[in-house]
Length: 79
Image (tube, rainbow, N blue to C red; front, side):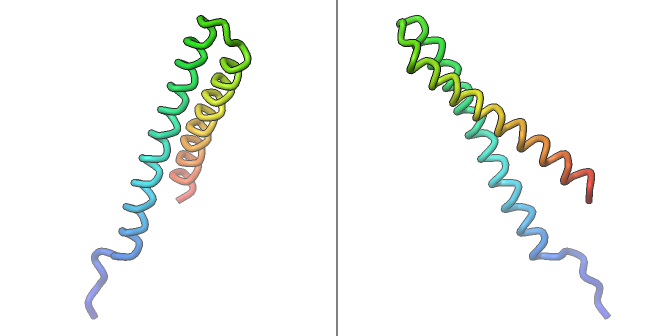
């Protein structure tokens, strides 16, 4: 019998999951930066309602990044 050295399907799933997670987390973090930047700019221009929505967008994006980090840590520690 020949032993399986590399499980191709599992390796492919790992590569795809890590690329999706990497691009997704990077995008979410960039949205958070954009939201906080827009909040600052809109606050200076005395547009408080739109600035609040930009801040909420930034907070939600930052929360999704934190959630992704927590899920990643949980997955790594349970396998």
